[in-house]
Image 1 (cartoon, helix red, strand yellow):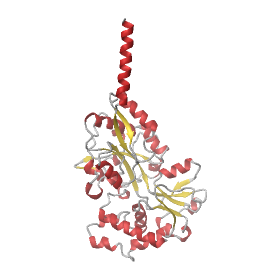
Image 2 (cartoon, helix red, strand yellow):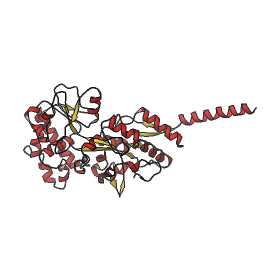
Image 3 (cartoon, helix red, strand yellow):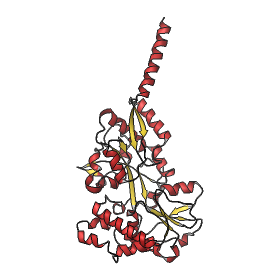
Image 4 (tube, one colour):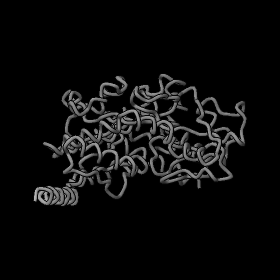
Length: 365
């Protein structure tokens, strides 16, 4: 009788566990393609179960992140609990995304890995509101120019961004057409200006508007830059293009190309390259145990295993000192120089940059 009772209790317990798992509340994650893998999801779900949060299960929502406007709409419609926002998106256009986020608690017992994050990345002003961070640094990189070292020698590589206008690179350059701001940054650096000087001109409405004149320095510079380009890519660069030997990439695609047998190397311009940082954020309406589950998720992603993946698999820069190596930082300690970070563009500056880019695109055809 006792054995039968024990067997019945075990059966009921098993049924209860299965029922709870089936009814688990989704912990909705809004991320860029490739950031959160199936093994990651399995590992976090196991952690949630082990730490008593088995009523939640990680769910990566569709579609993947694409840009600031799309990410704003998804968050505004309460479709995500956790996001992987690029840092400069947070305060773009009068804090409209910032208003949808909640402050991070760095002292949470569930964020034990937070203290291992690079201190220079945890207090960047564009991610701070009312003195509190709205982000957890995850991983970053540069919008840089990568050279095909199967076709070029080290001596042939450009050393200054100004070299990209040299006639020898005409038809051999590839840039993004989807996000034009980093292209503007390249032209700005070539002019001897800060990469995002147009964003600093927003208080001078006439001066900013004048940048769209056909003979303005930035317009002429952009016309020349786009005239060099044979590949304008949208979502991802094509490293198999036989015509291109200098190709812009955020680093992830270049790393993937090298893993597939390529030999692409980041060009180290003396002016540097514009930098970006992707972050982990919590939606403002996530509270209680669900918020605690979100912290467990974030802690895993700033832990040693994932931070090594950021470097070794994605070709990015890790945000944590737990990573075994961080080659891009080792080679250039000023990689994340504040002046090279993409800023939270103001709408007026964004409009002018778009107009300048569109005009240069027409002139290049």
